[in-house]
Length: 223
Image (cartoon, rainbow, N blue to C red; front, side, top):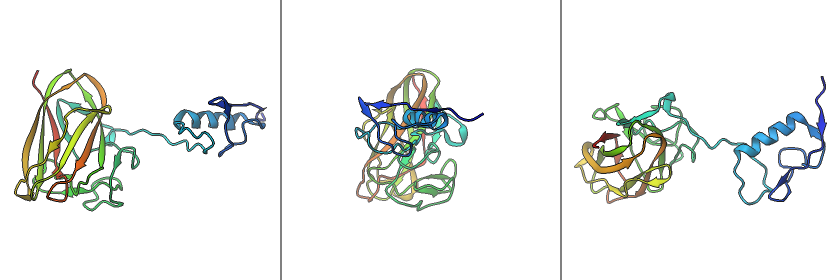
């Protein structure tokens, strides 16, 4: 059966879209092309300039190895979500300065024998961030334990949930050296049950020239 051909004018913000990768909106095109266009529109947020070609890129992440992080519980820092740069993570370096622990990435992964999983994140810089998909089992108040390391005073970072600041700035102390992990605890954050996106945001480097090395985030329910 041959494909039907339609002449469908598609309006975006009250005006006809530009052709982009597809035939012009007021020109005949096949049903298949029309379906592809709708898919692209559904997955590409408008930028205000509707004359730009649609990219059709999915702005989503998925849990590392398909496993949701559960809270209460331990979240390995090196197990951020799978996804593209500037979607699942953002890093100022073009390459991973550390170990090839997982898929090719710009995030710097440090191999260390004192880490809970033998790895952590290091070489952290201002402006970097990581996304984790988490499932909070019970609403309540939680403490967050984090083993960190820094040679001299470290910098600051924060943890967000669904785009909202959860912790405020957390400071990484001088632990006596990059190879010395010290446990820090951020107390009494409130979480609601359900699946959320957790974002760890590197804010400001310290005297060390970095924010600090981070092993994991352990959420302990208090009430």
